[in-house]
Length: 189
Image (tube, rainbow, N blue to C red; front, top):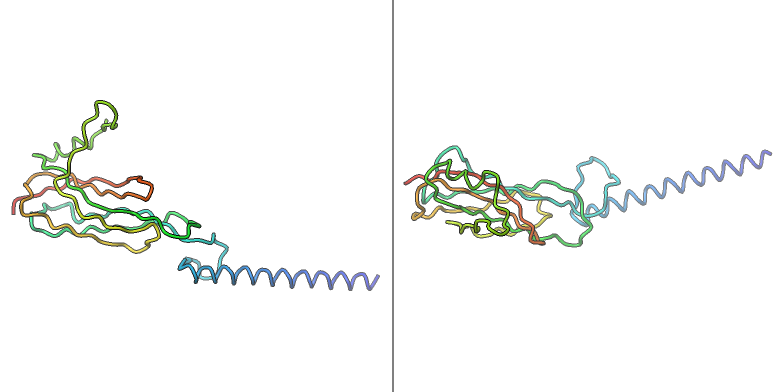
């Protein structure tokens, strides 16, 4: 009976050591993957998070909308990433960011009208998509970009005064679009 208990203790101790060794291998592998792929972890120690790259969606933060803008001014737009999850893709997907100006409209209310529901569906009888009065060059980012980026637009001296819809357009690799719209006054210089 004594030998039976001794052999069981030995088997238990051996199983415990193997489990600890396996755990160490998994933690070291996770740590190596984190360092090799550039993936970062918010945890202060190695965790069992999914292996892969962090992905982000991009949204625009416009310059101040509280004051009128003027032709000739340089406006800086910030493109801020927001964490969305992890991907096992082996490379990032491109994201194209641009700013479009539609107008001029004679009043703020007139500029708000195209943004008021019901919006055109794009189907039969829908209003055609207007041509922008000004479009920024596209800023090419990707869905792994974790730091804010900026793009600048210098308002042309020939830009007519009035109210404008400033729309940010974020286009992903599949052609999906997102973005927001803001109303800003462009005043004569």
